[in-house]
Image 1 (cartoon, rainbow, N blue to C red):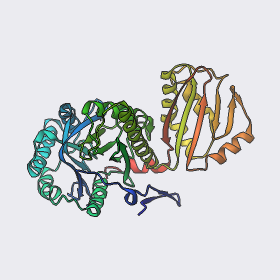
Image 2: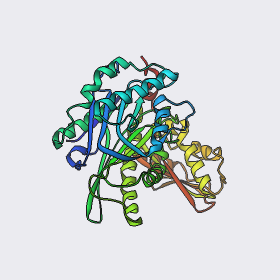
Image 3: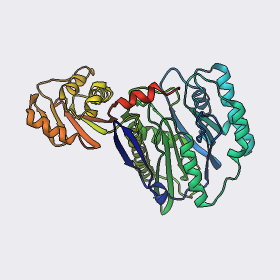
Image 4: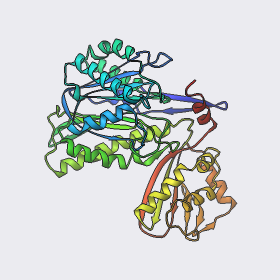
Length: 422
């Protein structure tokens, strides 16, 4: 089964085929998923999800750096200190943010409702929310839905595929598709699985975590090593993407490892193998988020080479990827190299305009600061017609490199966000 989605824009249809996830999903021991409609959203779509581990799992999480934070983030930062998690309850349609002490009370009550139904300690339940800021949670709907959400967890593999899909749908807001990745690894001949699920389409800027994401594995790994691995993977995936430059109030990435496969991290080689697999999962998820960016039609990988320092490489890549002028030029398929070099120049990185090389694909627009002419621009414009493209800026000042993955800006982004609360 292949999942795809379409965007209608100015009479054009953009169709993106996603990974054939359910045909290649690997079995994962001891995790159950559930998703349902609890009437939190106005449209009646699925809006309440559950992840449950048969036994307490090692856990690690990263949260938004926004100083305006939602109640679930406040609660999550406190509970993750234990390094354990057994269940996660997630709702969409309401962010439970800017709701004060009452919002924190509602978050705790949500966890307590799930804990009672699942017969586990309340401290092992994490809650997450995504949606509109400023409205109180409709707790009566949570209370009514919780018995249904937490019952009939099953070991039937086919049914579990449907439940996983239900969960992935329940966490969506302006997303147009589910985002899931499944990988299988082995340690000392023992196989284990990783499943990653994410939501995110708008308010995407890499300040950890720019969305909600869930990583579940049946590998045995300590919470300390899991946190280290999660941070490292995030720095090369979710922390290198941008849709609109806005950091959300609810951003959270949570990883759980319940050890039920029998595979365990025993040495540095095992840890490296797991890290590589985790990187793959999270990079794929991050690219899915950018592809599904609100109003987006193109995915761009921007590479900055030849920077004087690692910090300079990051600064230049970040400034270019967040530039609305660059993003609109990408949408218009206009190789406006002046916007890119100007963004690098204001980034705070060391630059010398007479040393810059700039290419779109294999077409150079600048060599050592010299424009390569109108024919080069025409060829670059042809490159820009692709759904995915790579732009490389070489500052020729050092040996450091960095990258960002970002999308273009279309009129549809404005329409989506102008109508978001209506």
